[in-house]
Image 1: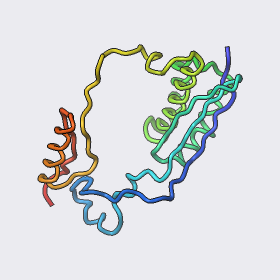
Image 2: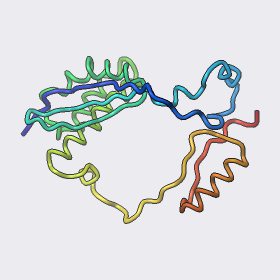
Image 3: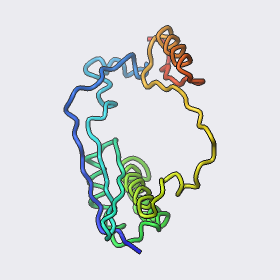
Image 4: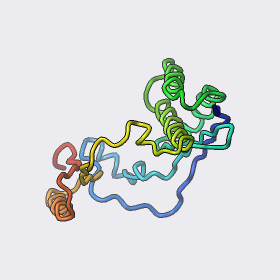
Length: 186
């Protein structure tokens, strides 16, 4: 049995171009505040965290987090790493509970859960590598021959634009379309 030897985190910074916002994320009372700057910049992930969980034999799994990566890095490095070092990665439910139970004093959402998720993803990836199987097999295997997909759009736009996009999505084989309409007209 191999045990967890290390947890490494790294925050990656993107300094290249980003896609300009298309339409509106939503329409609400805060629109007046959004006109002072680029409201969509927080939704363009300029930073990304990777988390590697490595065992004594050198095998490692990779997890990630996109929200508040610098803060999540600190949480993983200072709070959660000491909890998983020396443990068996196949005790994943125990490890998850061990990490989760530490969050009761400062909240069971946000940064804490994002950090736990990054480690958990890395542990599942690690287990898959250790047994030579994809993670979906570890989670019970295939349950369907096909998986229906839908077209999804993050930003709201005019009804005419969204209608045209939905028609294009339908031409491309999508049977469902999910979009944001905001909270009413401007």
